[in-house]
Length: 198
Image 1 (cartoon, rainbow, N blue to C red):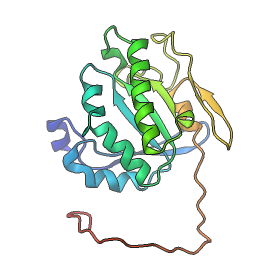
Image 2: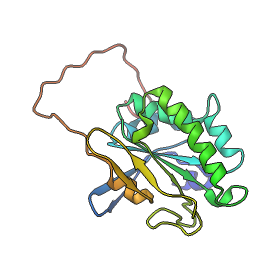
Image 3: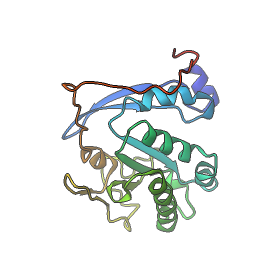
Image 4: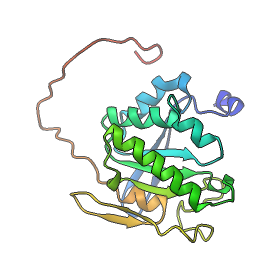
């Protein structure tokens, strides 16, 4: 969208499809900006897994994890909307001081783990991957710029997995069971009218 480019933010949900070794993946790019949270809810409610992208840049991470920050809000919304599988991409590793800092990655991992655990996520089943979307580090192939990174490991009752890249973390996701043959009963608490959605 022209408005997105001008403002440097995602406004509407966008879809990209690609194939991994295991799955056909549809990425739903949900808006991060607070003004467009209704669009983010629409996108997230359709997801099997959430990929929480956390900016590692100085000041950016701190703003996102602060009391009313987007990182907190998005993790909470994803869990509340029933998205129980989570991958955390620690992005902009090229912007840390020094670039690709292990200390910065570990600090972010510790802080995000602490928060998502409070929400209800099992941190042992969450892959944390240091990435640079701009340079492609640890996206599809292990990066030589993060020699300290030994990879991610997830432990869950349905089987453990490990890897080094974001694409491998996506391949380790377990498709949620969809009991479409069962009856559906929904409790209603309140009715909201969201402009533009319904």
